[in-house]
Image (cartoon, rainbow, N blue to C red; front, top):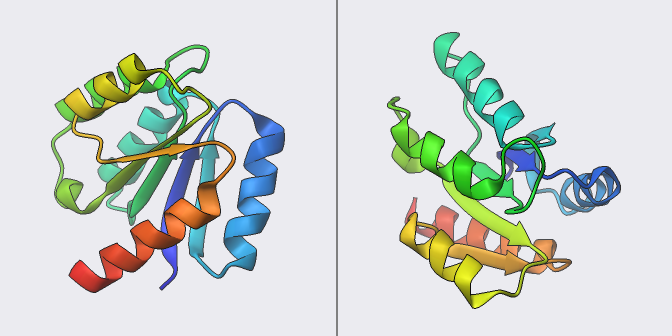
Length: 133
């Protein structure tokens, strides 16, 4: 099942690679890339205010300039909009720090993938979402 996906990561090359991989795997209905948490929040706010379809999956790095993933998660938690519970957030990071994993878990993150294995992990998440949704 194809999904609307928002990638939030400051690594432009990796974003291009992931975009090609996700499209080739047939997982993408619509894809948008934000280079940091601030861009991602603005993208979401515009879509919410204009009643545009929201991403079904947000794939985000933790360590980025301007606004990192943790601050994004904190600000995202403050947003109130219809369908918020249907958005799956996936942390996709090179961090192997148990502290980062714990901080993400404390913010409600259930999907924590280490780079570079996005496709394998995302396939399982999409399959699970389709089966339960």
